[in-house]
Amino acid sequence: MSGAITPTDGYRQLASDILAMAKRGGATEADVVIVDGENLSVQVRLAAVDRLSKAREKRLGLRVFMGKRSASTSTSDFSSNSLHQLVEQTCTLARAVVEDQVSGLPAAEEMAKEQPDLDLHDTTRLDTDQQIELARRAESAAMAADARITNSEGADFDSSSGRIVLANSHGFVGEYRSSSFSLSVSPIAVDPATGAMQRDAWYGVQRKFTKLESPEAIGAEAAKRAVRRLGAKKVGTKRVPVVFDQEMAASLMGNLCGAVSGYSLYKGASFLIGQLGKPLAPDYVTIYDDGRMVGGLGSRPFDGEGLATRKNAVVERGTLTSYLLDAYSGKKLGLPSTGNASRSVGESPSVGPTNFYLAPGSRSADDIIGTIKDGLYVTELIGFGINMVTGDYSRGASGFWIENGELAYPVEEITIAGNLKQMFRDIEMIGSDLIFRGRIASPTIKISEMTVAGS
Image (cartoon, rainbow, N blue to C red; front, side, top):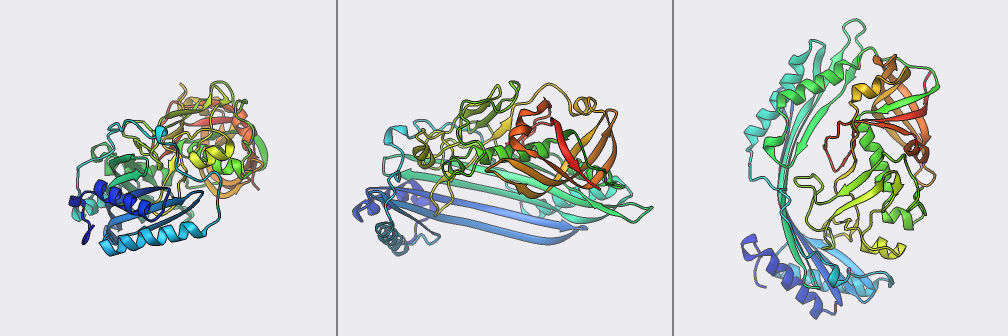
């Protein structure tokens, strides 16, 4: 290597050179991850540009193993001298740490053999003025939707595009490109009778710009959500059915995702320890983690260790059938990796979901609400009152009270409580409205009974 390395020099060759240097430095195994990307973010508030940021990222992360000892480092300086120093320092650090008997790369034969095109990248490039205009249109649509929308916390448009290259000493080399586009707006509604204010928001996220909802649709939905919260009341304490809307149901899937993470399990910090192969929910509940979903926000052809991603049935017909594991946590638990290694540049892999979701049912959200005489429809959760060891669950909430199968009035300053193990057992209905706005998603769900604590 000589001089600075640029993309045209080839990141694959750069990775190969770094691995060869690590081997000469005494490394028994090593892997390299290179990220090259750009991000443009704008925020508009009341039609004026409130924030504008543009960043170009280029970073290289190196992990080396000296037998059962390992260390990870990173740099954004791709000059030859810097990279030589990085390799030397990483090898020195690895020699200094204690041994870990399950440390090491996955076996060479486990590396991904194929790297399919999952349609993760869009060549569309929006300039600053275009993104500002899109944010303005979303905010303008929200402000115009209802006379009670009198203020705004702003509208944000973000776009990103990047390339990831991963290589290791087993000879694996993989790369893929990805992109994302997101638009959000947060209007404020005022009750003309009382002066009380309510804020809400709505957003869209897609890999492809053309698939993103229009600014007008996002703005109108945000306004609708803010206005419908006006006149919120408190309710008394009682046990009733609880319906979680899509966003709040996704947060429950996030809790489950944390509980099935290999790191939580081997550290004894999950209520699902020892539950593999046992019933978790009714037999109409199936939950997947699918890293090969075409265009998925969490999709990728290989994981952070070079293993093939795949579609894992985490819960199948109510039974817990799989944890989420990388190579390290899998070895700790005596199980193979599920292809869920997640990687940040300069850090060792950890476990992360790809596209984690509850398979949809056949009922609309309105149909599910219509089955309830007296209950709660949750649209916002506040706080983090969850004990992942016991599954005890208590969170602040707001939403709407259900009376005789209809949303009667908005409610706030309440708490919902239960236990995650019981809550999953008590899933009574699953909606048909599954939409991905992140890596974790869910349709509307109805839980047969929880404690709602109010005034």
